[in-house]
Amino acid sequence: MVHEVIIIGSGPAGYTAALYAARADLKPVLFAGLQPGGQLMITTDVENYPGFPDGIMGPEMMQLFEQQVARFGTDIRHEVVTRVDFSQRPFKVYVDDQEHLAETIIVSTGASAKWLGLPGEVHFGGFGVSACATCDGFFFRGKRVIVVGGGDTAMEEANYLTKHAEKVYLVHRRDSFRASKIMQDRVLNNPKVEVLYDSVIEEILGQSEPVKKVTGARILNLKTCETQDLPIDGVFVAIGHKPNSDLFKGLLDMDEVGYVKVQPGTTRTNIPGVFAAGDVADAVYRQAVTAAGTGCMAAIDAERFLATEGH
Image (cartoon, rainbow, N blue to C red; front, top):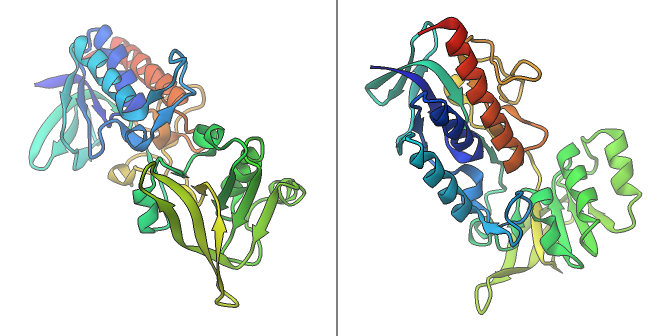
């Protein structure tokens, strides 16, 4: 059987693509992947998605997305795609040795934040540890936070957090930043930011009872080998994101980091009939609402492709 559209990956992009494709009677098959629901599954409160005035928990929101696409007949499969063949249509998608054929493909495999590898990142994830200032900065009004990193992302996060936080420590393992000059200047001239050069977080400190939260961070100075415990309320890891695009290496055009390239104003990749939506193709915004928007675009792009290219 040749499916009209196969969607690889869930999250806001994949589910929205499925919603539009299902309503267009394209009978989409969605492979939910390793982490069904994407990064929102490790997010606690989502307060910036339109239509939820009281906010909503990330996992609950993704459950609602899934229920909605299932209602319109999406075939959701909780399986991981292990290999693809885009050399000719119909395209081939494999789950281990099982082959699936499709006239169009929507890639919505998302991206993953890079982490430091500290146990506290896992334990306090969503309870004071975050990788997205625009998502979670609001919860740190009047608080003290740490941003880890030295690139443009770290500068942006630090600068943004000064709108909410009382104090921002910028922890960087070297004695100079790799960020652009303009971004550095903004941060270095901000009175709320204190830079800790040649330093790393050795341990994230916190409590589990009565409320799980971060209470501090142990900072190691790499030059002096001295440690200090800083009382803080949040840790923002800003050492970059990695798009989940390894499956498509050598097939789809990507930038040097691995973000899938799409034609401006569309979700079309370099292979006609293959579309990319959400964070796997977005190095700039990385928000649930923008991912959902490109998921909608991808479904419409696929529908139009099928109408013009035939089956």
